[in-house]
Image (cartoon, rainbow, N blue to C red):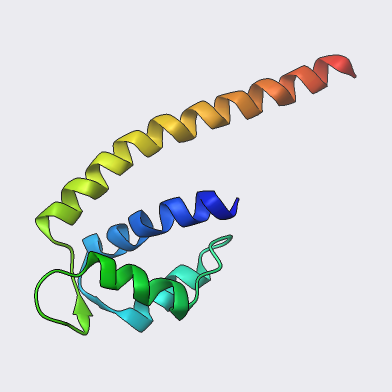
Length: 99
């Protein structure tokens, strides 16, 4: 699960920035409120540093490259999520037959 969280956190940040500009602490607070993410400032600020382009800023926004990356991830995530859901539902149906 931790690898899944780590792999999707960047795209969660991009999705929040797609809604509009936010301060780093706003990102931490919003992500921390999401069930299962367990985010801290020590996780978010290094990620924001990797995403940053241009001079240092305190207010973050989504760039065109970030918007494209989010769109690509969103398409792939839907397919991935649907595949995992189908496998889990298949497993649940198998357990129902065993009863």
